[in-house]
Image (cartoon, rainbow, N blue to C red; front, side):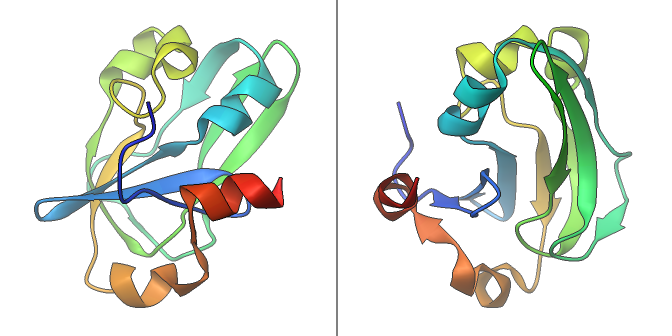
Amino acid sequence: MVPEGILCSRTHEYLLEEDDYFKIGLTDYALEQLGDVVYIELPEVGTEFIKGEVFATIESVKAASEIYMPVSGRIIEINESIVERPDILNESPYETGWMIKIESDTAHKDSGDLLEYDDYFDEL
């Protein structure tokens, strides 16, 4: 199930605001296109990224891909579960398959080009 209020980039990352942080991951559509994920490399906690920078790499049975920051921010948590069991991404991209949590003072400004899920899906 797609959470309410989720925003999506044209490169298939999502941004979900929760309390005082943001969750970032890959959309269900992107994961469906990739197929079964076999490996993911995530950054270290504390690393800062600018919107558009590559923050992770993912490998599936079909392809290897880079994952881009939808907004600027500092990593406050990574999802260790998906590093150990990448298949979680395909099973539940929004609940247990999120990739990172960030703090961002510029997320609202940076997210101007992100799409609501229905609009994102219509553009596919």
